[in-house]
Image (cartoon, rainbow, N blue to C red; front, side, top):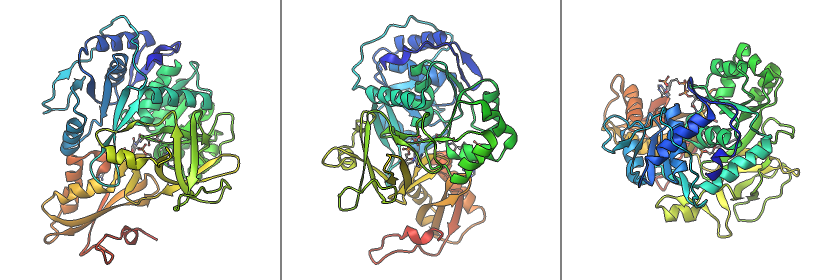
Length: 466
Ligand code: MLC
Ligand code: AMP
């Protein structure tokens, strides 16, 4: 992004306890950029650290593409992301055992910043994200989409160089990385990444003067359980929630404890943030706001006709505009399927729009995309992994309602033989070892058979409560 440096950068950037002045961060990133030579697509093991921030910024300064990799990626997930993305090297630390070469990131190095004229259509990030079936796909996010997305949020939230943003989100998704790191760098404001996102760390950041807070509903719900920490957020300018639905009772409890009405916004890896409650609007529990600058939305019925914006009628949400991705890496069919013939992106979410333009997200069309703690998890990926375990004959993975996580991953498993002691824990660990921690089932239920229809398709609705 050419304008990473447009801000004044008065406030430093602190990531998990390590503080860098804006100029030092830029100098270190410029040194990374200078050392990148011919590397065009780099993998970054996205630990919550200053190294990750400098690596990502350095690669973007050089016009390279970044593939952020979850630091707890298991064997199969890591192999898939590296093979599918064809990353040239690791930038910064490599996971143990990786055969891909690594290019060091030195936080103490400095080089002069020389802006490059990079095509705004060039890919900035390749974010891996789960679909309903199959392996995660690489979402190609162009530089212009990131710029448009951040500028639209700066407009919606009156986000300026005077703000200090605090959050403890992972640095390999839109929320933590695009909004949470590139956001403050582009507007020139400060950043405090708290390492972990807990009530304690958020309260500490508030006491240290942070003005804006980003979190997923799970974190907000945990903050709401701790009045002694929530109280510290009273002085903040803006509390923002996203990545999953914020339960109304959590919104209300936070308002009682902090005097703040949490601002909700809605988005996806493929679209960045498309709908947001404005800082000058009145946040309403259960509603996520209006389309951001440069974005349009529409609701369509199953037959393709438009659904009225009457605050009650439910339709499939489609979006178009400046913040959208360019397609899935090497998957022309999946890319084509994602768009309608007349150029709208199908979000897969179901929504209601009020006459004043406010959006309410009702849910997802497919039960096979699970949101747990704000992480998007494809049931199909977890099922294929479980089927790779010799004890598993059949399985079905669902997302069950969970007060803390929104949904929790539950696996129904038909075994090849009798259930042995400790097998549930073994299967859970197996998923963690192959994929990553948040994709592990929180519960494994052994059953004799799965409910199927006459066609033999598993009827997941019959596995869900209610
Ligand atoms: C998890 N744990 C398990 C387990 N599953 N242990 C045993 N069995 C299982 N099945 C582990 C965790 O790995 C963790 O381990 C420990 O249990 C305690 O977990 P926790 O501290 O409570 O954290 P956890 O519940 O895992 O995570 C909650 C969370 C996290 C909210 C902090 O889910 C999170 O950071 N979510 C953010 C996701 C996000 O950024 N999404 C944005 C997508 S972009 P240990 O060893 O770590 O303690 C997007 C667009 C948009 O959606 O709109 O923003
Ligand atoms: P991801 O690709 O991980 O970014 O997940 C995107 C999905 O998260 C969307 O399709 C929605 O289902 C969900 N989501 C994001 N923000 C919200 C929100 N504010 N309310 C409800 N769901 C949300």
